[in-house]
Amino acid sequence: MKRKSDRPMVLFMLPQGLDDGLARRMLEKLTAILSPAGLAPVDVPPPLRSSVLSALAPEGSELYDLIDDRELTQLRQAARLGFFVVRASGPHCALEVLSDYGQRMLPSFDLATAARYVRELAERPARS
Image (tube, rainbow, N blue to C red):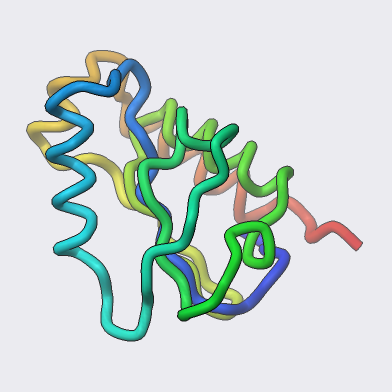
């Protein structure tokens, strides 16, 4: 996926249909544990909180310095397909699906559809 920035970031996307209850709070705690070294929590703007659970980036970063609206729209679609974690650094970006348990909780998950979406993202040209 072509990005606005080559700085590292990790986004934890919110699985579709997850409300503000216990499951969300548990996932938020889990994302804090999974934080890679050198990255710190980044404020997620209110309009994105319905689809981005949390964000990590180099200290002092702003989310919109790392990714633009077009890219966020693409990742929100990926979350609807079952992707939970986005890891990006330099020209590389990895999308990770929910665990086996998470996939069972998302009845619409289809591996072939998810894989096709990743190929489409990789083939899209960067915006000038």
